[in-house]
Length: 163
Image (cartoon, rainbow, N blue to C red):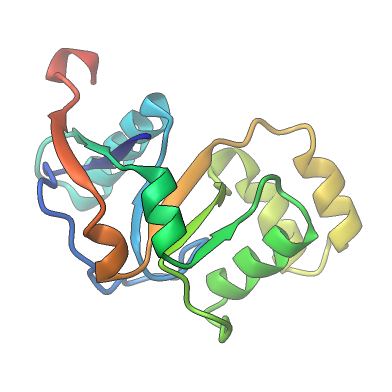
């Protein structure tokens, strides 16, 4: 499996760094299989941090081996379990099991309004899930442990002319 990580720096040796905000899948190193999504994220991060250079690092992972040897939480769609998990993580209230890998849809900017309405109690869970069905959701693979990171092989970067 080929993975991408968008940032304002090249990340040849990924590390787990404490975040200053609560993210969809909690603490970890976030990647995606979608190059365009990573490019978009690199642009946002570079603008937000007001420094560095838009960069997308490329990795390879033997998913069959890694997923067999590590703990994995997988969401194949934006279903009720995914919504509960993301909601708990975004609110900083998740206290469940810790996994090496978490794979599933990303609640990106396109679904931010829907998610905010749900978090504020304006949308019910059912309304939120129905609204998410019409959105194009990309994926993310979060590596949440040093063990998970050990399976990543840095392959290089997306050429600047593609960014």
